[in-house]
Length: 514
Image 1 (cartoon, rainbow, N blue to C red):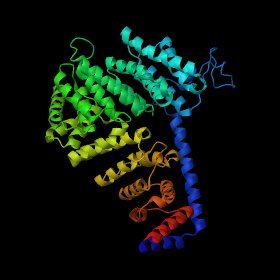
Image 2 (image 1 turned 90 degrees about the vertical axis):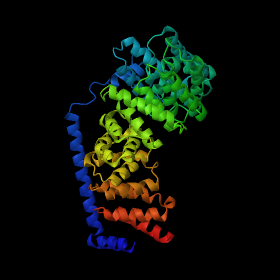
Image 3 (image 1 turned 90 degrees about the horizontal axis):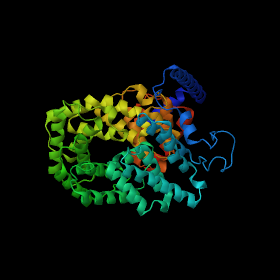
Image 4 (image 1 turned 45 degrees about the vertical axis):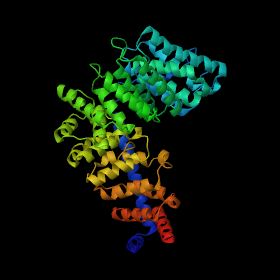
């Protein structure tokens, strides 16, 4: 501590406060200029999303009035806009994204289908202005549409539409999502085998189905699966339904099944497994055994063996990256016996771009646990995918954990995905929206990992870390304070005048609590 204090005092004597302020202003101007220039270049580049449906088209579908006019113009009464007033920015963004996904996923979507999708979403945006009778009517209409899909045996609604409406009703609908609606939803996902798609769709829209609603749907789903038996030649194979149910229940906002029910379903899967069971179903059940922490090592070993057999029969190109990652995580987490050649074969067919953002870090940690050599083979691709999708991560601590894992492995990331641009890892973690989510321990992990990486960190990010940490001193332990200051001393960092004051506050707080 004395050496750090001496180093800071020497630096303060060498540079006056005015000199530090001049440098910081110059750095800020340079950063602003370079950022603006980069944005100009990005605007001139052909957009990678030109194939996507434009926001204007989506707004015309979602927010049009009876006369075809957009809601974005002058203020109108509720009667003029057809009871549709976007009241919540998050709801509006999620509804637009759900409509975009539905139109892009359903090939050949006609105008009538697009308008139907928009009408199924539009009433949620004016929810607070709808009377109770109107709310009940639109909810009945939505579930009647689901039941119509079931009876007519037509192509089901896109999972993004169902996910948005169900997540909306489960969190805001209250009593309108009653037992009858839950039964209809359970029958729908059972007959189409789409519970996992609905749960994943809600997560992709940054929404969630309430744990109580998900649990009730899963319980009804279990009853339908166990009561139907094998159903040879009728509907979906039972193994497909079981895999869908287990995966959807284990990846939702809360585990939707009790361990006893999950274990019973795993045993039923082993009984009904047949020709309709592929790598997707096998990986889902293996991942569910790990997620529910079931005592089913024998079943898991057999399923992993079957998965490898199907993958080898397809020449190593028969399974997407998320399925292989799921199996690798299960092998590492459950300490299943494995051969070096088998793991090497799985990693050779691993397509990192297909792994969901929230599973990238755990996949890297699992591969590293299996063999450190394999970790070094995939870390560059994993971190590249993680940095590209960092805004889709849900936990605030994922970036510090990723930085810590890279530092422990001795990997030095490129500067662009780490800290350049608005979509970089540090830019996301230290953004205005994340400032209250980060704990003192996560900030210490971040600065400690950055001090170990052989990458020059921009001073603006270090200033932000010091600023955020100085506001969490009362919840920090002495060991965290000391680690923070030691890590900061290892960085080639010239603090601004305001940052020096904050460092002095941290130092005094540590000295006071020693």
